Length: 68
Image (tube, rainbow, N blue to C red; front, side, top):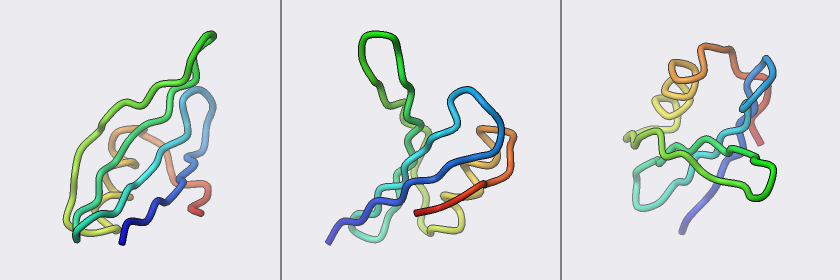
């Protein structure tokens, strides 16, 4: 079963991330909104949800605002 988490970090700009859980691994993507289309930037993969959240913190340089 796959599950997806929506993560918003504090600050402006590209502050929306997604964590996709599949087969006991967590893939992290940054959601980028462009003028014409939206895009996803692959950040990395971890073995736990906590590590995925830490990866988002490190990549963004910001604290987590909310996780859905």
